Image (tube, rainbow, N blue to C red; front, side, top):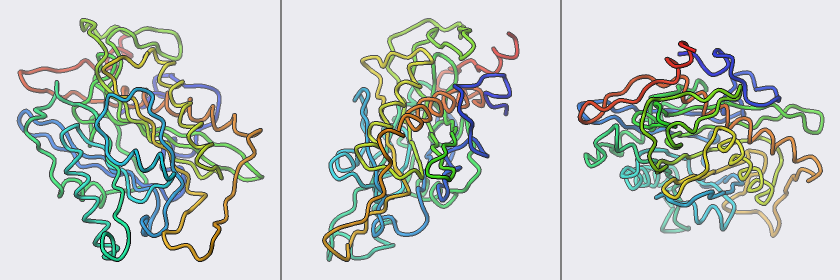
Amino acid sequence: MARAREFGLEAGIMSPGAGNAITDVPGVRVGHTTLRRGTVNTGVTAIVPQPGNLFLDKLTAAVEVINGFGKSAGLVQVAELGTLETPILLTNTFGVGTCVNALVRRAIDETPAIGRETSTVNAVACECNDGPLSDIQALAVTEADALAALDAAGVDVAEGSVGAGTGMSCFGFKGGIGTASRRIAIAGRDCHLGALVLANFGRAGDLVLPDGRRPDPRTAPQPEKGSIIVILATDAPVDQRQLQRICRRAGAGIARLGAFWGHGSGDIVLGFTTANRVPHFPQGDTTPLARLSDSRIDDLFRAACESTEEAILNALCTATEVTGPGGLTRPLLSDWLRGH
């Protein structure tokens, strides 16, 4: 499957990381479970931010809700405390509760004191509605599916119609999972910012490619009522406030492609940095924090914008055909690009 750059589509001016993926951030891994049977086209995508026990050694994290028409779990505590203590699971709207249960069970297995000798765990699961291309009422996602996605996590990131992206649509075309990254020099070393998107948004006919072309999906425009989840990862030393500002710039990458964040679209950005860890059991009254000077943050702003835009393009370009209930399909952007 060809990615956006193989079609001559480049987002912005910054250089990507070696894999042009969220896993260019050291330690980040991604896995999928894909469910395709009968009228069910759905799945789970897992983002494992770092190896080891995230509950005991949390990551600094932040949330930016661009438009809140969504049913995700765990975001309120991330916004309040600025920490991430489980992997992130992406799935369809009716699979969120199941994914939360899987994350809680996995966390308890790793730390039996959870909920008894210490606090409960804040599991994070995000969603988009894959209803048109999948029978969402089948409640097909199981805890075993969620755990399998976690166990499958690795450096190589499959894109398109896989995992949580199996039944997703984007700008009238087939959507799904996409990823991209950007490299930034900070304090004499290369850092990375990577994006992974679950792209299920955009009004048909509104897509604008980086070269100015406007692909026609030959689908009647309807009100925008899809969603996009953007996961940003970085190893740059930023605090929660800076990270939320970086997350906000992902919205620029979404808008560059023609979206306006319609009433029915749930557009959510969750970001984390691997540079500042927060121990569950601190050894003293203070915790060390490395913090980028605000005068240097523009590079990360641009990286968030560009990597989000390119991740969406990669989701569109790598998507493969999926047939939903009633024989419904979505055209492929890759077919349009090859013909134009």
